[in-house]
Length: 164
Image 1 (cartoon, rainbow, N blue to C red):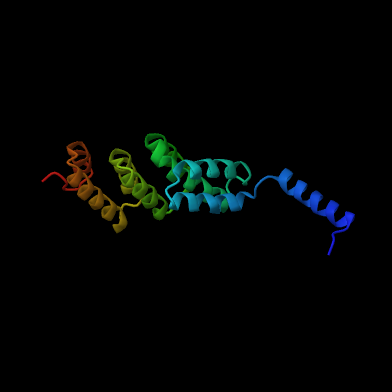
Image 2: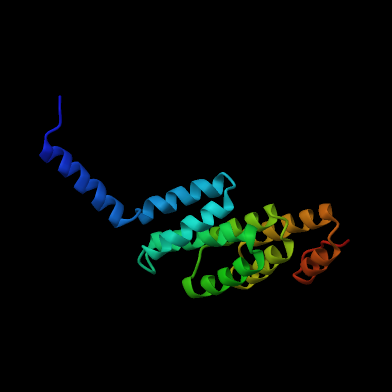
Protein backbone atom coordinates (compact mmCIF):
# COMPACT_ATOMS: atom_id res chain seq x y z
CA UNK A 1 0.00 0.00 0.00
CA UNK A 2 1.47 3.32 -1.10
CA UNK A 3 1.27 6.20 1.40
CA UNK A 4 -0.60 9.29 0.29
CA UNK A 5 0.93 12.73 0.25
CA UNK A 6 -1.19 13.71 3.25
CA UNK A 7 0.00 10.69 5.23
CA UNK A 8 3.64 11.41 4.39
CA UNK A 9 3.28 15.08 5.37
CA UNK A 10 1.56 14.17 8.63
CA UNK A 11 4.33 11.74 9.55
CA UNK A 12 6.99 14.33 8.70
CA UNK A 13 5.19 16.95 10.81
CA UNK A 14 4.92 14.58 13.78
CA UNK A 15 8.59 13.67 13.50
CA UNK A 16 9.54 17.35 13.35
CA UNK A 17 7.39 18.22 16.36
CA UNK A 18 8.86 15.36 18.35
CA UNK A 19 12.37 16.50 17.50
CA UNK A 20 11.61 20.12 18.43
CA UNK A 21 10.03 19.17 21.71
CA UNK A 22 13.21 17.59 22.96
CA UNK A 23 13.55 14.42 24.92
CA UNK A 24 11.06 13.43 27.59
CA UNK A 25 12.68 14.26 30.96
CA UNK A 26 11.04 11.29 32.70
CA UNK A 27 12.40 8.94 30.06
CA UNK A 28 15.82 10.57 30.47
CA UNK A 29 15.69 9.91 34.21
CA UNK A 30 14.84 6.24 33.60
CA UNK A 31 17.58 5.96 30.98
CA UNK A 32 20.06 7.69 33.30
CA UNK A 33 19.33 5.24 36.10
CA UNK A 34 19.90 2.42 33.61
CA UNK A 35 23.24 4.00 32.69
CA UNK A 36 24.10 4.30 36.38
CA UNK A 37 23.28 0.61 36.91
CA UNK A 38 25.48 -0.23 33.91
CA UNK A 39 28.36 1.78 35.40
CA UNK A 40 28.17 4.40 32.64
CA UNK A 41 28.67 7.17 35.16
CA UNK A 42 29.44 9.96 32.71
CA UNK A 43 26.41 9.03 30.59
CA UNK A 44 24.22 8.95 33.69
CA UNK A 45 25.57 12.30 34.86
CA UNK A 46 24.89 13.91 31.47
CA UNK A 47 21.40 12.41 31.29
CA UNK A 48 20.41 13.50 34.80
CA UNK A 49 21.78 16.99 34.18
CA UNK A 50 19.74 17.37 31.00
CA UNK A 51 16.60 15.86 32.53
CA UNK A 52 16.73 18.28 35.47
CA UNK A 53 16.38 21.20 33.07
CA UNK A 54 12.99 19.89 31.93
CA UNK A 55 11.59 18.93 35.33
CA UNK A 56 9.70 21.10 37.78
CA UNK A 57 11.86 21.90 40.80
CA UNK A 58 10.51 20.24 43.92
CA UNK A 59 8.60 17.55 42.05
CA UNK A 60 9.25 13.91 42.98
CA UNK A 61 10.76 13.26 39.54
CA UNK A 62 13.07 16.27 39.95
CA UNK A 63 14.21 14.93 43.33
CA UNK A 64 14.75 11.48 41.84
CA UNK A 65 16.88 12.98 39.06
CA UNK A 66 18.82 15.16 41.50
CA UNK A 67 19.63 12.18 43.72
CA UNK A 68 20.69 10.21 40.66
CA UNK A 69 22.98 13.05 39.65
CA UNK A 70 24.68 13.01 43.06
CA UNK A 71 25.18 9.27 42.74
CA UNK A 72 26.65 9.57 39.24
CA UNK A 73 28.90 12.45 40.33
CA UNK A 74 30.18 10.39 43.26
CA UNK A 75 32.46 8.67 40.74
CA UNK A 76 33.75 11.75 38.91
CA UNK A 77 33.67 14.37 41.70
CA UNK A 78 33.17 12.64 45.05
CA UNK A 79 33.96 15.71 47.16
CA UNK A 80 31.59 17.89 45.15
CA UNK A 81 28.86 15.24 45.14
CA UNK A 82 29.15 14.87 48.92
CA UNK A 83 29.08 18.62 49.57
CA UNK A 84 26.16 19.27 47.22
CA UNK A 85 24.26 16.26 48.54
CA UNK A 86 24.56 17.43 52.15
CA UNK A 87 23.26 20.89 51.26
CA UNK A 88 20.40 19.35 49.27
CA UNK A 89 19.63 16.86 52.04
CA UNK A 90 19.25 19.61 54.65
CA UNK A 91 16.88 21.55 52.41
CA UNK A 92 14.76 18.55 51.38
CA UNK A 93 14.30 16.25 54.38
CA UNK A 94 15.59 13.15 52.62
CA UNK A 95 14.96 9.56 53.65
CA UNK A 96 17.70 7.40 55.07
CA UNK A 97 17.80 5.31 51.88
CA UNK A 98 18.89 8.41 49.96
CA UNK A 99 21.92 8.69 52.22
CA UNK A 100 22.77 5.00 52.16
CA UNK A 101 22.61 4.77 48.37
CA UNK A 102 25.12 7.58 47.99
CA UNK A 103 27.35 6.07 50.67
CA UNK A 104 27.30 2.75 48.82
CA UNK A 105 28.32 4.49 45.60
CA UNK A 106 31.11 6.39 47.34
CA UNK A 107 32.41 3.17 48.93
CA UNK A 108 32.20 1.43 45.56
CA UNK A 109 34.46 4.14 44.15
CA UNK A 110 36.84 3.90 47.16
CA UNK A 111 35.94 7.35 48.46
CA UNK A 112 35.83 6.56 52.17
CA UNK A 113 36.39 10.09 53.46
CA UNK A 114 33.29 11.37 51.67
CA UNK A 115 31.24 8.35 52.82
CA UNK A 116 32.34 8.92 56.41
CA UNK A 117 31.29 12.58 56.23
CA UNK A 118 27.81 11.50 55.17
CA UNK A 119 27.59 8.94 57.99
CA UNK A 120 28.60 11.69 60.42
CA UNK A 121 25.71 13.81 59.17
CA UNK A 122 23.35 10.83 59.34
CA UNK A 123 24.20 10.33 63.02
CA UNK A 124 22.81 13.78 63.80
CA UNK A 125 19.74 13.48 61.58
CA UNK A 126 18.83 9.87 62.39
CA UNK A 127 20.26 9.37 65.91
CA UNK A 128 18.24 6.25 66.75
CA UNK A 129 18.24 4.60 63.32
CA UNK A 130 20.12 1.25 63.34
CA UNK A 131 20.89 1.63 59.62
CA UNK A 132 23.31 4.46 60.49
CA UNK A 133 25.39 2.14 62.64
CA UNK A 134 25.16 -0.55 59.97
CA UNK A 135 26.70 1.90 57.50
CA UNK A 136 29.33 3.00 60.02
CA UNK A 137 30.31 -0.59 60.74
CA UNK A 138 30.46 -1.37 57.02
CA UNK A 139 32.83 1.59 56.62
CA UNK A 140 34.98 0.28 59.47
CA UNK A 141 35.30 -3.07 57.68
CA UNK A 142 36.12 -1.34 54.39
CA UNK A 143 38.70 0.95 56.05
CA UNK A 144 40.33 -2.03 57.79
CA UNK A 145 40.56 -4.00 54.55
CA UNK A 146 42.04 -0.97 52.79
CA UNK A 147 44.47 -0.30 55.65
CA UNK A 148 43.21 3.29 55.80
CA UNK A 149 44.24 4.52 59.26
CA UNK A 150 42.88 8.01 58.61
CA UNK A 151 39.43 6.61 57.85
CA UNK A 152 39.63 4.39 60.94
CA UNK A 153 40.54 7.39 63.09
CA UNK A 154 37.59 9.37 61.68
CA UNK A 155 35.24 6.46 62.33
CA UNK A 156 36.62 6.05 65.84
CA UNK A 157 35.80 9.72 66.43
CA UNK A 158 32.21 8.95 65.45
CA UNK A 159 32.00 6.21 68.05
CA UNK A 160 32.86 3.24 65.87
CA UNK A 161 35.62 1.01 67.22
CA UNK A 162 37.52 0.83 63.95
CA UNK A 163 41.11 0.99 65.07
CA UNK A 164 41.35 -1.63 67.73
